Image 1 (cartoon, rainbow, N blue to C red):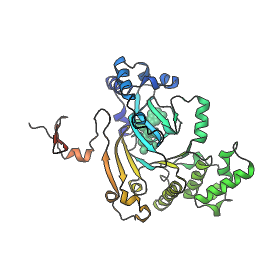
Image 2 (image 1 turned 30 degrees about the vertical axis):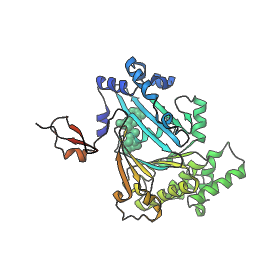
Image 3 (image 1 turned 120 degrees about the horizontal axis):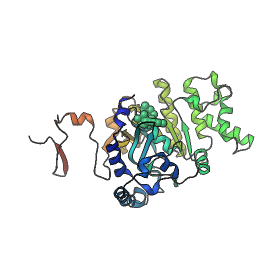
Image 4 (image 1 turned 180 degrees about the vertical axis):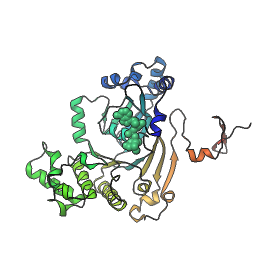
Length: 360
Ligand SMILES: Nc1ncnc2c1ncn2[C@@H]1O[C@H](COP(=O)(O)OP(=O)(O)OP(=O)(O)O)[C@@H](O)[C@H]1O
Ligand SMILES: [Mg+2]
């Protein structure tokens, strides 16, 4: 069992307190209700609190529903296994703008894939609010969900075997998702266009089994784009290729984003990636803990950023304050305080909030 996995296995009392804090009963689909007792057992108190909160959701508060293609509000995902409940997302809040190229980083088990799978409609969230391209994912029925998966999102996985057919050529593979949507010549034309976009025109007639891992991954990107999705989701797309190939694949994402304005969300372990995207959000224990936003000066000349540039020069790092006023303090910073217990002193001094060791 992974370390974080252990941390996420909560006792009954802990689960109760999380249920109270994160519950939003009004948003639960019947499927999600069945899936988790948490939703069914929500206390009246918890529901009241959530109603209060849902009135001030990001989308309502500043009318950003049009600007933000993904609105993720207090999102909870609980996996129930035989004897334990795993809280994979613990009230995750994030807004992702239309046309944004962003990365999600975080330790193993922090909830990155879970988050991506929720956006991709591959799994249902347990509670909270998730609106993608104006569609409330809690309200979609099975048929609408199939439609959503086909037309709104494209997915690229680390292990490209998941969406590739080795005995077909690159072109045939890219044509596959268009099976029901286009005429035969339309499909071929579009497939060739996409292969050119990912720099593989010269390999269009090669069988997948004769292509390298990096080339196959580029075919996978073309496949994900075949139905002209609004959002491209990639889970560790460079995880099984070497550094150079990984960098090339990220450049392909960057180019697609710049040329077509497609929203792209990439999950990765690779911190170097932060130089290539507009924003990096870090997930810790199922919640966004910090965000690094590319400095405007660099955004204007992204293409000039070299491998030698320090990440800190490229991006500003921010911690995320949730609505209840909580902020996660990174371990590296907290260690410097040498705390003995779990109490800290909080003061407001000269326009700054200062956290210090309590005087003994
Ligand atoms: N289907 C499932 N059933 C039970 N628990 C699950 C399931 N999927 C994920 N989890 C648990 O939820 C937590 C978050 O998992 P997730 O796969 O989202 O992590 P991750 O950040 O993608 O990790 P990695 O970097 O290793 O891919 C983990 O504790 C994981 O064990
Ligand atoms: Mg994962």
